[in-house]
Length: 88
Image (cartoon, rainbow, N blue to C red):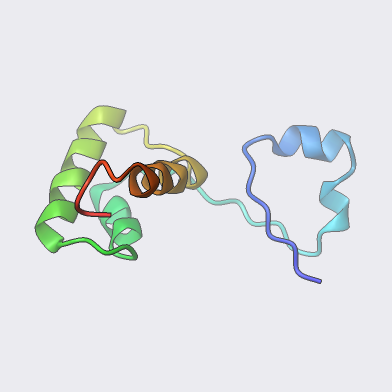
């Protein structure tokens, strides 16, 4: 069985001794840089110009602090579901 999970609440899972059930635990750092956002968005149906514009805005909006990968992917998913953008 393969279980893949993503959480920002690792401490809570450690206290509940859930983390010990997994063989591998990977820490994924926040997405901060324009090139990282571009890399994530390039996995979706998007034009290069749109990806660049979004990545540039992202860097400005987050003030260089970035966001967790999970939050970025959720945002992309919500954009696709809402049909609010041609890009995704």
